[in-house]
Length: 476
Image (tube, rainbow, N blue to C red; front, side):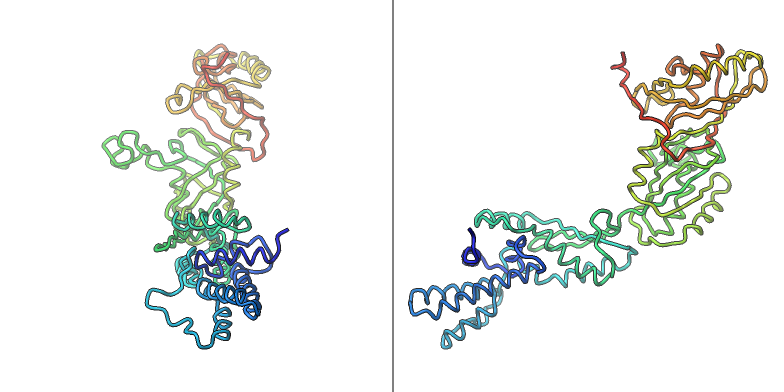
C-alpha cells in the first residue's frame, strides 16, 4: 500500500533530477485530492517534505541529519521553496546560502520554463485580443510545441507517474479562470462562441481570439424565376471574370444567398457568410407558400446581439421584390445540420404548369389522372440527365404522397404534387427518357413537359421515410 512516504520519496526523486515549480509538480499528482489547485498541491508536497526533513535534521544520527539537510537544499534550490530556504537559514546560520544568483541563473522550471508564473500576463494579452468581440461564453485551447509535451512525457515515464493531468488542460483552466472573471461569462466546452488559442513553446507564445460562427435561421420566398439559391461562380473563368459572364465572375447576376446575406453579415460584423438551405429549388422555379427554411452561417462575427426584425425589414426592402425573408431567429449549428440532413425526409408541395403533346380531351385527362393516383405512390428516380454531369449516377426511391390535376385545354394542364424532399418533379412528369419510373407521361400516354414550376409548401415535419440509394452499376 502506498503511503505519504511514497509521495515524499517520489517528490524527492523528481526534484533531485529537475527544477520544478509548484504548478508543474502539483500537476503530476492532480488526480489526488480535490478542492485545490495544482499550485497549492505542489506547494503542499514541498512543504510536507520540508517539514519532514526539518524533523530529521534534528536527529542525533549525523548521517540522517546530513541527508536531511541535503534534501532541504534540493527543495530550496530545485523546488524554489521559501520555507525550505528559511529552515536552512536556521539550521545553518553561518553558511552562505541562497546568494543572489548571477544574471541568467534564476530559477527556471524544467517543465514549463516559468510559464505558470506568467499566467496573469498571458490572460491580459488574451483579454486585449477578445475585448472587441461580443460573446456569451468562451473556451481556451492550447497547441503545445513538442519541446514541452515531450519533456513531460519523458518525466512521467521516468518516474512512473500516473496521477497527473495534461499540461494543456492545466494552462487552459488557469487562464480560463482569470478570463471568466474579466469577461463575466462562463466557459463553454461544447459550442463556445469565442475561442482563445495559445500556440505555446519555451520561446514562443502566440495568442489569437477566434469567434465561432453565428447561425441565423429563417425562411425565404423567391418570387422571380432565373435566380439560383446560392452564388454560382462562372464555369468558364472560375469567378475571375470573363466575356462569358460579362466580367461578373458568376453565372447569374444574383442569387437568394446574395440577396439575404449582406445585411446580416454587416449587422454581425462578420467576414463572410455561408448559406444552408433545406433543399433547393431549380433556378427557373419560384418558391412561394410558407417559404423554404434556411440557416445563414456568419463567419468571424464580432456582434451576436442585434435586432433581427430590423435586419429582416432591411433585407426585404433591399431585395426589390425578388425574394423575401421571414421568421429570422438566432439558431445553432445542430439545427443547421438537422436542416440539411433532414431536407430529403420532409415533404414538399409543388405546382407545375405543363404542356401535353399531342393534346388530350378533358375526359381522357380525368381518366388518366385517376390512374396516376393509383399507380404513382413510390417511384425510382435515376439521377436526371440534366444534372448527372455534376451528381452521382444513382437510383433513388422516393415517395409521392398526393397528385391532383387540372385540365385547362387540350395541350395545357396543371398538376399539384406533394412528394418527398429531393424528388425531381420535372422528371416525375416527363419520365426523363425512362430514368424515372413510373411517371405521369407514360401513364397518360403522351409527352408531358413542365413549363413552370413553383414550390408552394415545405413541410417542417419529417413526414417521409428514409431514402434508399443504389449505385447504378449495382442495380439489379
